[in-house]
Amino acid sequence: MGKGKNKNHDDKPRSSRGSNGHSIRHNHKRMEMRHTGGSSISKFPVKLAMWDFDHCDPKRCSGKKLERLGLIKSLKVGQKFQGIVVSPSGKSVVCPADKSIVEENGAAVVECSWARLEEVPFERIGGKHERLLPYLVAANQVNYGRPWRLNCVEALAACFAIVGRTDLAEQLLSNFSWGLGFLELNRELLEIYQRCTDSDSVKKAEEEWLALIEREHEERKNQLRNEDLWSTGNVNRKPNHTEDHDLLENSDDINYNTANLEFDSLGNIVANPTKELKYDRLGNIIESDTLDEQAVELQEEEEEEIPTLVKSVDNLRI
Image (tube, rainbow, N blue to C red; front, side, top):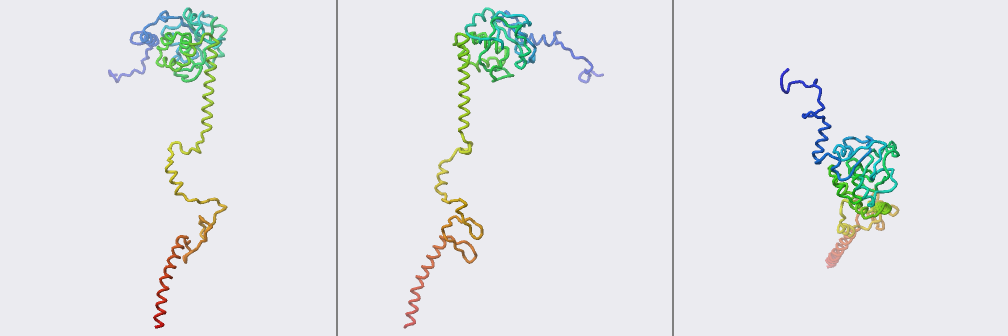
């Protein structure tokens, strides 16, 4: 067997390790740590934790990426968390009054699929500070633009932003290329929540925002319902009012009601049935204007012939 490019490598098993002898997964984790500039959980200002139920694609799971970066700790079923727990089983929403709990004990989330919530044993996880999130819109690559469908990192960032620690939210989201877009997408709504005082005021602000969305939706529906495209004509062509005016001036006032129509001997519609029709020797309809002209010509010819006849009679008398 020759050397170089002609050598057959099909029978040689592929190695799962990189050139440095470490596994590909280990190298990937080191590259992410190098990109973010750290690997220790203690480097993030507050504690972060999650219960991971392996429902999501590891390549798209934001919680697993935070774990690879060493920013979040994975908890087992049965373990409790002392900080704010963002969970669907919460009884109240996150509010600015939770700021001290977040700063002292951190925040945790439940890493699971929205479609498989019934599989999660919520009674065996969580803590005494379980919270819901108010209305927000996802910016992640899977559920972009969909309300409520936040992933793990968005849920943590939302918690930090609502309690007034937007700096923590930005620091956490900066690990994702799309991350800061979440804050921008929800900027106005997050500012409203930050001005609230407790859970009840946040809930009221959420209800007012949803009512505003509903009103705007109804207004758009009514506007579309009132716009009759048939009456407006071709919306892609700007109407020419001057041209329409000229057409109206030059148009004939013809009544095309079939009850008032009459037809000639050839089956043609007679536009003005009140006028009497006349035909020439070939059977063609003679227009009224033509008849009038012919009558005038005949009268002129007769007037010219009268003096000639009188002169002829005089000559005969002589």
